[in-house]
Image (cartoon, rainbow, N blue to C red; front, side, top):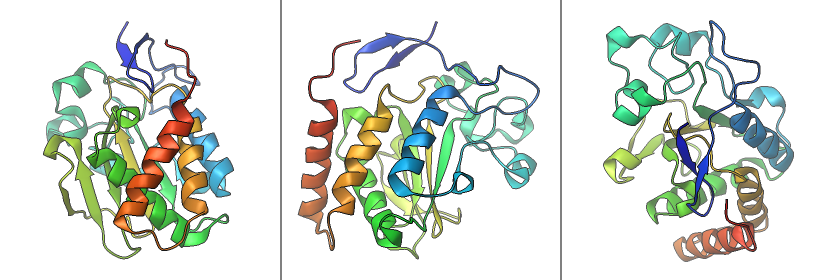
Length: 220
């Protein structure tokens, strides 16, 4: 079975379990469903605002991490099934999540702070986020940006409509780190308690949230 990393980087032998089992269309894997539930609880967003499986627009293009192998259009040499680790891990499971911007708990300001915290943690090499390939995000609610591990998280422009949502994608062979729902809630708790973060505030908040989320965790 494929080897995945847990939050602390220890190997856990597991595979992405589909719920329901794999079929002819893209499925939402159990680990992303778990993460989705944590985000819904932390943000207060309705279920429709936190998406895993691609919609018709995604399916028509056929290139996204929101799609499984039956909907990926291999003739387009899709970026989400181009790396060897994505080819090896390609199943009927989606490997991305979208988070809407209009949070009942904290509003768009909390959403923007979350975006900046996430990107700061990725660029700092946070081991808890090692399975994430990239995020499409807005730092200020209007600019559309992308930070990709394949490009050392250099922030570039994005044509995704991430002025109204945040997109996070995982390498297909990795799955979401175990316990990532706890990590998300810890970060969200930090950013919901802060206003007007400076760059130093962001770095300190990320470090504090990670320390809280990973303390006393047993090795897998």
